[in-house]
Image 1 (tube, rainbow, N blue to C red):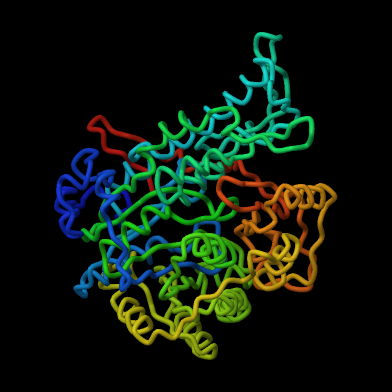
Image 2: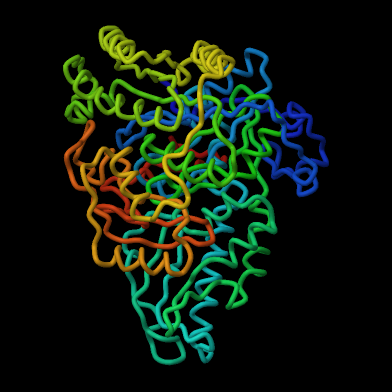
Length: 554
């Protein structure tokens, strides 16, 4: 069986100018980065006009196994299937982080015969956007420390802003900086986030244009002064330089699928520690250039889809016209408490037990006005009995369920899914809703999330969380939406609670403010904004031969 990288390396991609023509873009509308990838030009972005009839399709999932359930693969297969049915289609996806690529999950370009290419370049350095975010973030951190050393005219007393790195490196979670005497600054405890968790990544993905980017960068609260008032990036005059670093990163990247469907791949916030959706600029560009746009939201619907509605849609007024919920038999068995080494063994009772997780996500999506289409993403180990049993359970819930085989068959494996999505959009039965209103207090927003989406009975707040809620409300940020930072491995805060946990207390351990991004981050349970590598990192299997061909990426 060919690996993902083998399939990608054997592909024959079109020149990127030919892909651009599919969207009626000229050579002046793109800035090529080699033969097979490009950025939209600044002049192109300025002339794009909204198309009210364009349709947005959101792909989300049940609570995944550690390896993921193939959201990207389904998204890509669905887009290819729509294209094969002669619909003008584009993808809008996040770009991969090096952390997961070298860690547990591997790359994020789909898999099998439903991939975006050039897979190796997209997964590694791509067009440098994530590097630009890292640089802008660390420039701000350096200017902050320099300001304090150079007389500290703003009276900074408490620092909020951290450095970042696009790598899983647990040793950087907590560090000491400024050691070595006065010439090296003031010693203090600090730490790093992974770049995907940087507020600047969220800002890049939520900014509408360069002016909005600069406004948001200026609003970043980096510290607190001796009077207990916020200090912003604008006040230390860092905005112009940061924007200069980010100006090209703000422009969406254009690539293609194995079947030559245009794909905008741009921005990479994680959904467990950020808002988990590709950029506003990419989504608007795709919706201006195609009739159907397929996008995805990270991890399970309790994280990605909830944040898509309550943060992305609330901010942009871009709501999905259909929602696809990806499910797998192996994930159902995991939620039925089957151990990893036994997931390939037929087990109908475990599927029945684990179905509670999928049912919870179906019911949660209905709270946003959508009855999802369930895409049952097949794996080679799935048996006929297991498939039939899962489809029967879904039929009892009165939801449309379609087999998805994009990994093995490309667009042919997702044609039924594409036809079902088109039919659902044409029926226009969905009504987009938000879970809470802006004017609701921060505590009530959190309680609503915990009870309505995470199925908790109650919520507890630490004294630090209570103190920060009062402070940020006093500063005028009480109307912001909540971005929950919690595990992706459970609907709850506790990764060991599989299925659909209930009758538990949802703990809020800390509250942080992302004023530039425009949301409040609430932390629950054990959640690290700088992940660590596993015992056997995926990086151990990655290599490059004398011809420059990369192997081991998946």
